[in-house]
Length: 619
Ligand code: AMP
Image (cartoon, rainbow, N blue to C red; front, top):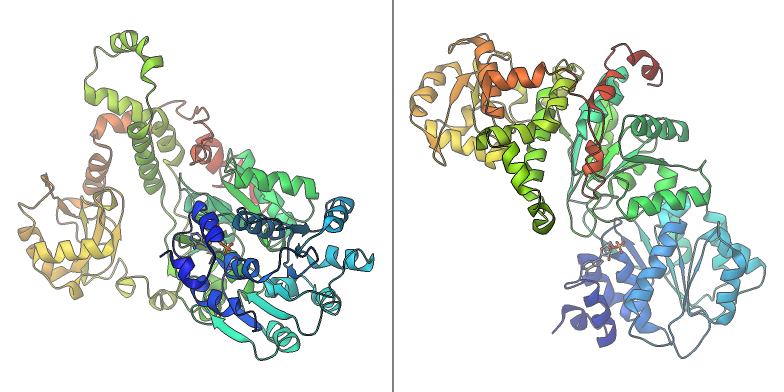
């Protein structure tokens, strides 16, 4: 039996939601649907956005209302126009196999006559933002005297936006014996107060711990100097597949960052209250359709945005109100997916991170701003991946093949591969060749409190430890835990003695006590990984013990391992003249756009080079 049927949902609705891909109820649906289906409780659900709460209240409503009658029986209030349209749309989808279900969306910034006309035609479910709803009530264009259910969705947001009085006025036109269902991501005292005011003995459901953020969200912070913030931002999210929302504190900052990013060739746009509704709709449409990769937004403008598959939320500036952090980060990891919420802070803001940790009940991981080398490596593999996965149009290409083959006839397979990869890669190398370290130095004590930083107290430079290089990394599908296990098994040393592990793309670093170095070398002497010899070297970075020939050598060797071409490639890459010319790599939804930039221009603006001054003023 279908799990939704087991919860008491009728056949035609189950069929409709199956078409939407709902196979199993989400936790909130599982727990709230049976309660709400009784129709006899007030209800408070503490749940994040993206947990499936629309169906949690929407499906019971469709079961409980009498659709033979054509008057308002349910009113759903929500904070934003976007959410209002989303809920309306969802309800229409759930009820597509039912007859005579009329749902009307009532929201500001759109023609009121259309909405009035729809109401006049007959409606059972009204989904509304408070301001426009009150306007319609004041025109005496709707009668709520037979409303049985009121849903207050994202109640905390509605209160944040100052809708308290409007909600009071609207609810005063509904019958006393209606049932009220309230959903909120957080439970500040104001929400508690309205729960108390409008409800009798509500059934309370808390998904996860109170005020706890979504468990599928990883929280990271990066510490930078204020002047490096923009440059750091561009490296942190330097992820070819990113589909993100960047939060700024003010409209001006939002606009400025968006403009800078656009100028720098990013696929970004701004969303804030100074734009007209039409402009905002346009931006949101592009974002939803994924023709935009980065949405730069204020808290208010981004309320109610429920776009699935957002991979990153970036707090370019931390919110003034800690509660807002939960709303921001809740824009990612929706519908059971995972996501990352990043905060870019200066050392003084570390206290605020600790405060947020207490509110969300989860620790942040301190992350390092990637250096130029890391970024290049990531890009190289993105290119390699793209070449590997490209769809070949056999028919179209066939006619050109003889000429292409002829052109390449003097090159080996390896040469051709190198050249393809280098087409884009050279300009990254060129662009990042002198990229500075943007990590701001911070107090060691703050590092120590980071649970996520393995071995942080034994940071590089601790003279009891030696930092070793190994030619295995994330491309070999190692994470820190896996690598620790592999090192311990191979070197036959205890995991507890291993210090900081830094997994990079094609290589990694790990620290071992000086006394264990010899043993590690001995045990790894003939080690192979998937048929490849494993190479260990003393790293030149951060240790004085350069047993195997010093930092310079291991540094170069590392590059050889990474780019498989040694000295020749180094010349071709780093010294290439005019390598920055870069065509748009195609605005594909999955992220070509984000990499579409003229590498040269980007960092120059912010790294203190000749054009940097102008841009710097803004930060
Ligand atoms: P909501 O929290 O209601 O905005 O839902 C977040 C997303 O999860 C929406 O895209 C829903 O379509 C989707 N969703 C809701 N319930 C389920 C379910 N049971 N199975 C799969 N997806 C769901």
